[in-house]
Length: 266
Ligand SMILES: [Zn+2]
Ligand SMILES: [Zn+2]
Image 1 (spheres, rainbow, N blue to C red):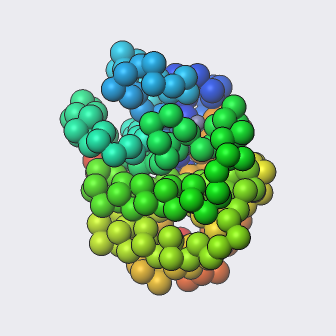
Image 2 (spheres, rainbow, N blue to C red; image 1 turned 120 degrees about the horizontal axis):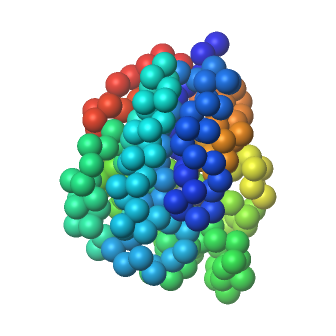
């Protein structure tokens, strides 16, 4: 069985990953992948917004590192992308980022439910204790629907990220998933099966089987991503992710070339 493309991986420019793109590419070939894509954390309009992304002035260095990997490993398809934070009001900034290089795709991710709280940041875990979990999940999925509706992204990243630390609301979240997925379906936006969740407290792929099953019913396309922050994480747990996708009915995955989607058999 050939594994799908790993479209979510990082570089040291984001200040919390190790290994150069050439090292990720070498590992991808060693485990039999034929396609990968770099999607490091994009710059923000102000460099001091937080401390877990590249600086704006490093965007060209990032592209150069990916181009170097492409030259070193011509037998591997290597895509150029970004994981871009979606915050309401950032749309023009994101459009300007899109115009700066010939990207293959953008992953739109919601980490921030306000301008100051990135819900997956372990240093801010105490914020969860101050709030009602359902309120946080609702705010997160509202922003995720807005990200899909913006049509700025080919893929929506780790669609149920609020489960990262295992803090789950008692309420039924199905209506939150439905609203987001309707927006994704309408916009023609894919969601990713992100295996990094298996390495977090939630010990589960993002998104859950329930959310993925609803996505299949609504014809939302899927991609696969390890969210690798180290070369050895490339393609990690992909066999299980493919099995999960097949279980809910998927037979195709999606890849991107110059922001055009291409379906591939799973
Ligand atoms: Zn990261
Ligand atoms: Zn992310």
